[in-house]
Image (cartoon, rainbow, N blue to C red; front, side):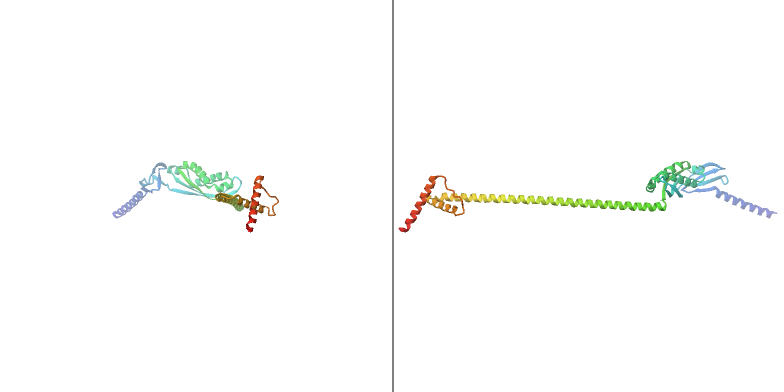
Length: 312
């Protein structure tokens, strides 16, 4: 009988130790640095634990850990009708981080489902107000607008939407082909415009070069003509100065030689002979008759003296 009591006491002791061990294990909670813990006691909110080691009452208190790191919600692809009635396939991702664990636990039942549906609805609204071309070229605008809407809507859930990124906006295949043809035509048009502008610029440059060449050639010719005229003028001046100097020298030589009347008359006759060489139709004689008589007398004296000289 005693042995039975010892055996039962040992079993009870083991059970108590196991219970205490389980109690100790469940009483200790560790909150990691990127987490916060929401503690409930008998179904009522008690406190929010910061990261570290904490003790609770097992089977009375319950703790729910909330990840405070940045997380992502993948918005599945959906069909969206643009303002110009084109159906496009759109999907996005939403990056968020928890700011208030209490609100995240008690203000929304399923945050991921709620955030996904909210993002899909507002994505349809934002893109539905845009034309197709605008929606394809305004990704940043769509991202910012959607982020502001979601951040404002999720504030009561204790969540801050960090950013929203569109992964794709895909029009139907026929619209895509039409856009490719339009883009090709636009590029061809731009290429033709650029080529025409290049030809125009080249023609203008060539005309400008020809004009400048003609101007420079005309200026060169004008300068050459002017220089030639100046040279001819200088040559004539030099010739005239030379002739004047020669005449002056002859005149001075005649006066220095003191010519007699006989010599002057003789030279005069030689000059008359050259004047009346048969080619002249007119003969100019001195106006003074006295001068003519003296000249004729002088000529006669010269002839007489020339005839007497041989006889003697």
